[in-house]
Image 1 (tube, rainbow, N blue to C red):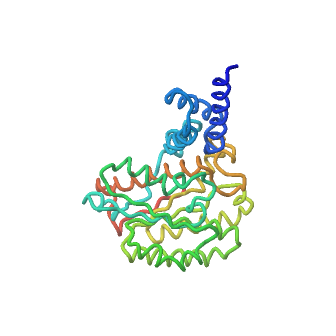
Image 2: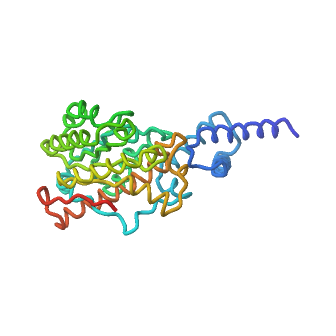
Image 3: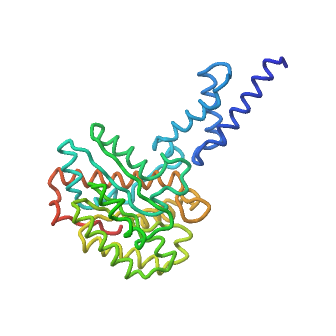
Length: 311
């Protein structure tokens, strides 16, 4: 073997190794190898900086929801996406061509623990989907998730980190840590109801997100059932939307026969890149449908808003 061929082969092996390390968990080694080969063909002989460029290209490809769903599709629940009730403020802002600010408020699954990069968190996935749906709109999604928190800690920062931002829509993910920490469901419900009232008084639309269906959460079935039921009752009482994440994720496992490790990381609690991507996709579908209903006059804004029922 010539010296030139030997060096080329060593560089190629190093390139493949670098890509395999940097790839998100959702891309298989076969995908990594084929991507590296494609990059090599595009750029000719390996040279300084090729590995970094290849890794960047793979990451860029992985940002696309369609790419991450190539292995396992993100299917809507049986019966299709259900509207979460009208979102009059968001609809009015979009219709008027005004900027729309969304605040994703919650704990670690909002912050994005378990994702392999910031762009793979659910708020960033959601922002990308809304930008595709409304390409001329100025839509911003702020991530205000902090790991380990539940209603008590969230209420302490509600004013400074959420209300003071003057959001048009707040997506509030809450309840999981209350279950894991054995917090009183009744007290949690009171705090969530108070928080909803404050957000509504500020003029923002609001969507609640209930706990995730995952092995660790499922070790406390009675507490989880109470929390999910409580959040849906509060949403109905306060006339706000609720995204039934628990039922959506249970459908992945029970009706779509997906193993937990297909959408949950090894800690048995947090979602992986695919889980966040599908969650964001279905949530975004519901937001788009809800906004469209307001525009078409299907729902009556404010007083007539109906909360989504559990599936």
